Length: 155
Ligand SMILES: [Zn+2]
Ligand SMILES: [Zn+2]
Image (tube, rainbow, N blue to C red; front, top):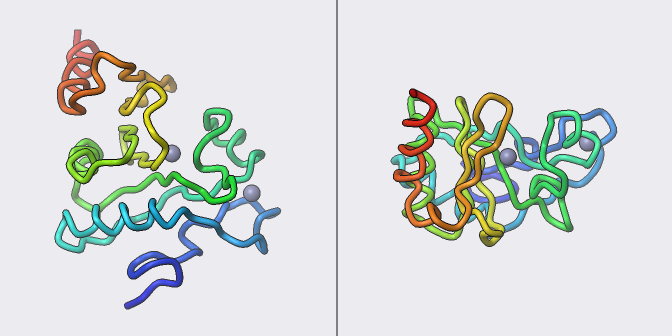
């Protein structure tokens, strides 16, 4: 098994799904691919399912992505939304935190990973259509930040 982007990843997985981008070259940061291979390894080689990789600005707007999203290739796409069957998004996030060098967004059904430096948040949580950023103070530990937000949610 060998992908055309890296050992386990294929460009079709990262392609912008809009009709306009059908024939555009898929561009994914090699650093991101390396990190994703490490995430895969952290779960004993369970397949990492890419739900969203590259997005053109129009597609990013359509799916409600933040402006200047790392999903938009510039020149390479530096973000992916992933899931692993049977693994909770927070557990993917915690594995990614251990690997390091990634910003991590936790959603209900997937985990966003990108290789942009923190600016200023390293972690965030998608909650009811909103994004809660860890900002500076809770940048130290994803688990702590997650517990604070989840605790608030339960109140
Ligand atoms: Zn597109
Ligand atoms: Zn994302």
